[in-house]
Length: 295
Image (cartoon, rainbow, N blue to C red; front, side, top):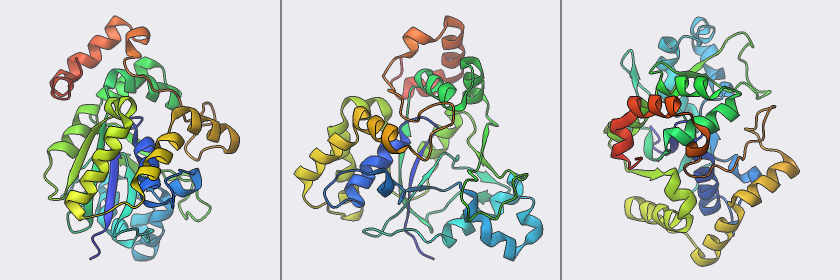
């Protein structure tokens, strides 16, 4: 079994795309300049075209993939079947799924996965970004974060997908707390790096160097032309640069009602959330907010 998948995991709207952009500059660019086209080499795991092979294995299951108990049987089979672009021994995938087991089917395993980066964001800011992205009210967004049974649909945009439009495979994301708990406390037995979104936007150069060090210390992976590459990554992953690129050429993950790149500033919740909304988040997540320094 090939062990090459490297995950970039997070709760939705936590900085996953920014980390993907950084990894694109490190692994898929000759000079560190990040292009949206190159970011496609780090694709979303939960796209329905990845499910096509199940139809030939078990047609009944294929038409019942809207049931997580059925889909979970194939999580690891899907991962093994992927033909990813392998660079320096890594095949990168993005996910928002929880690292959980359903019916004794674990989302992934150390036999398949090589390691992962997990990104955490203050849930008080996250709920604002998630509301904009999902076209939710703030209250609906908070409810989503607090719901231990929250799910999202797999993306069904590819012309190569065989999935009928009336079947909706689901990714299990759970609540903000349970998601963090699953990826930071479960011992998958592979190297992991946990990053806070706030550190990423305030000290990006330090975090990029931390990522480079992580790959070197755990996998002996060396990055060439580091000084010039780092300079170009910093420039082409800035909010202004990526926003202009989206305006010029669009971005795959944007929603019809909103652009994808919103300036996700730290502590915007202080000006946006009502006291009752803030209290609901803090009361639900106090333990893990304290654990990761969100006062």
